[in-house]
Image 1 (cartoon, rainbow, N blue to C red):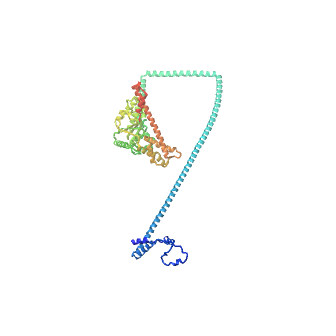
Image 2: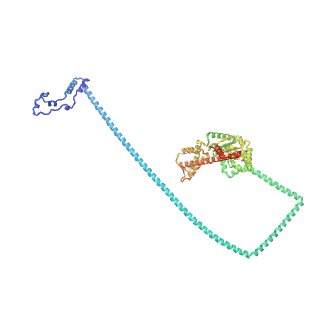
Image 3: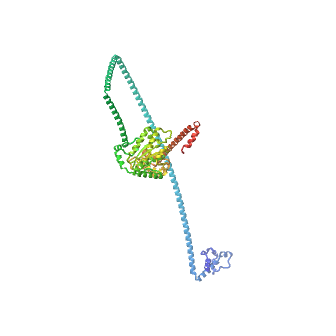
Length: 615
């Protein structure tokens, strides 16, 4: 391969004009003709030699390489290799050109991307400007609309004020007219009366003698008639008494008749009382009972349709509609099952005491327990017994006599029982309340298979110790927690809002929003509210829809009603705390006044109040 490299290095350039400089033509024409060989003339001048001077060693090397290549047996392969090298160079140059074109294309694409990005930014900026312009125009429109509303309201107020002034002026004119008419009428009436009195006085003066004579005649006749009547009655009674005292048989007959009359009156009075008590215990119901599911014969005659429905009722679940904590629901379900089996087996009922904050489901569970067990229920309140005085003992006996006559068994629910079942050692308890307490203890001293006693109270610490001895189970009801509040809110939202809206019978519609999320939100913000307050909240939602113009309940209306209910609840709690503080203060003052009346001071009272008041 050395010869090939030598050949390639010895190749002369294709353009020899850079190495050869043509001499200028001679001045005599014969100068060119005289030379016939390759060698230039030797006797040239210095300038001529410089003109023909070039490097011939490259040509010589190229010629030698060409001759050597021609003599070599690899001449064809060398030529092909040279062609391949040229082709490779062309391909490399083509690849470089393609790379250059690709880079140029990439640059054009990048430029287009940059132009598109700039255009997108420009469009975004234009859109932003349009939005800002639209918002500004909307704000101006809203402001103009608000100003129009304010102006319209002012105009309406001005029109209303003018109407009121006009009505007031008309009323004043009407009043003045009526007063003027009444004044004229009064004057005419006074003139008429005055004229009549004058005429009557004149007539009386003229007829005075005649009137006096008539009065004297009437008085004398009345006196004669009275005297004659007295004489007649006296003579009749005197003769009758004389005849009666003279005959002993008549005396005995009169005494026997009077005795029989007295005996008949006494017997009728006693039998009437017995019949009345029997009718009250069998046909009627005691006056203390505020609500009962027990139908008497009179109720059946008055309300036959309800009596038929009552016969068709089936026992329901004891906890249907009652939402409490899971542990509490488990306890109540056990009590319901035990009560139902007790009634089925005609066993002895157990008395229950339920205590806790108001509105936590005590009364509702008592009703559901009676319906689940197939019993009748009767609801009374202790506040009705306290003001009855001496009649309270009789009312209690009538109540328990009526309860004993129940064939299905009676659940007797006494709400606010602490009103008349307080401790007998209390100084504020009257003798009538003590008598009622003793009568109640007497009638509940033993277990009964006819009635079941259920007491409810918010202050269990006020009960007499003997009452606690009559109670078999004590259940404490708490305010609903977060999960229970959410279940209650869903229940009342469905009951008071969704069901009436789906029925379509009332003016109530519901807007489109997430009901489940709304109920969760309401349950979260209504902490401390009882079940009764949540049910009233459902009624408030219904009322808000009825109050609106189109009857549509929106999410904003629901939340506004909730916030108002929460504020009212806080106000009631504040009132209760203030009442408890005043009560504790009065108790402390009375105790201090009894123990140390001379040491009673305000700072001690305030300190005791802060210690006794609930957090």
